[in-house]
Length: 239
Image 1 (cartoon, rainbow, N blue to C red):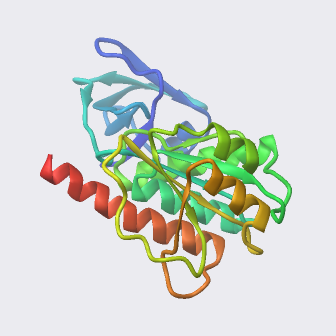
Image 2: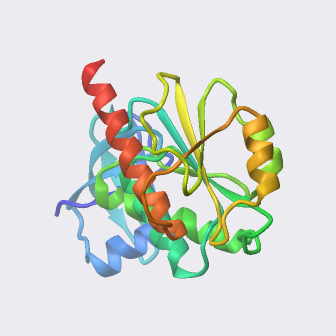
């Protein structure tokens, strides 16, 4: 058996236990048996080979091998602040951004956006992050922040970061500055309002376009994640 499972509390020299959705998948979908070997990851950058030593209907206990740091992250932090789309489009967006290596997703509340995601929606989206990490081999979970009003976000976000506003009709992105992190804000279907664009540029954000056409929210987010993720990955190769 070659599968990855999320075990946030694993520690070197100890056994590890998983329960809930992870245990259900292992026990009832994969039909794991005593002695089966899997890979566990803690969502903080570590993984370990582990063998099943005990199981019941709702939990699985493992004997851990060496817990090792395995870094599959981008060379710099990449934050996408997005006015989230509706329904299943949110889940798809979160899944793809996790695969692309985005560090943090910030749900934005804007003048033209839908209602902010509820606590139960955020819980489901965080579960999607775990599932995407299991599939793509990433050992560090993409963080999903609390929903944040756009005005406060552009005023307070780290000014040492390269801060970009995705805005149709602006010059295409030539490249991001060589800073510790990059953040891109992506508006709702109706775009950012004129006042929001003015507030962002006054706070030091740059306007840039990422495609000649107007993209849907999730298309823009994935395109930007891929463009900047590829650049930051090349940065790590040069380091």
